[in-house]
Length: 287
Image (cartoon, rainbow, N blue to C red; front, side, top):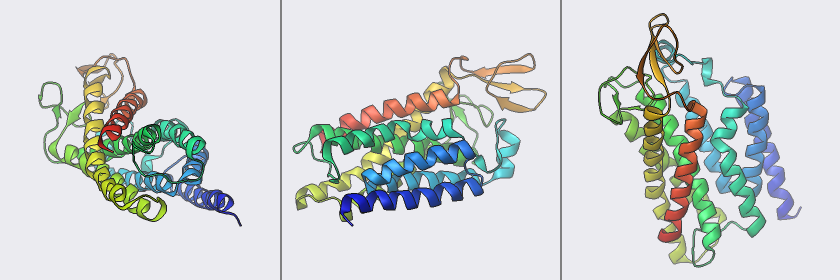
């Protein structure tokens, strides 16, 4: 079987297994599983590196979502058992990267390119965008899921005043460190798989190691952008009836911070777009 048929076949098998498994374990609902299958299929069909990065994001975020569920249930007003995600959340976390992956395929075909602006600045920017995208998503998830479990008092990123856990735009040192580590894991995955799938000269291959610190910075940057948006254009208030921080104003809700302009999905999308753009530009100059 020709190579261009082998990779899509492998993509179908892997995507099917992961989507069914995620649905059965309640990591995704039915709509999320269908969307996840399509997104994963495209990633793996275009590049094993992109598929691996997506899997690392999905598996680590799914596992961390289930850590400390009892504690999160008390704090999080929108808590879902198992952190179950729907198609909207799937596309918010992978839609842009999927479009970038298709564009890369249209330009390079089945060739797995290294980051090298001398060879192609456009391809380098597009690959950098995918790295920034998943570094941001992974960083935001790790920061949120681990930060809320920290014993430290969260502080609003805009003025550093102490706020209740679950407040949009609140940060802890543990959460910021988690975001940095999450980005580094994405970068490490990309580099390790790339050593086996991408072909480039020794100097260019060695330079790919810079992806790891770059992705770490992207993870932190994405989390900070998300927090800044959450503290300013996303509403947070304390509901005296539910005794929880909520994301919508109401008669029993006392405002903590933010304007009621964007919801959580919109904030995630904006932070992903900005981090994707910044990482794309950085890759052109670095590589």
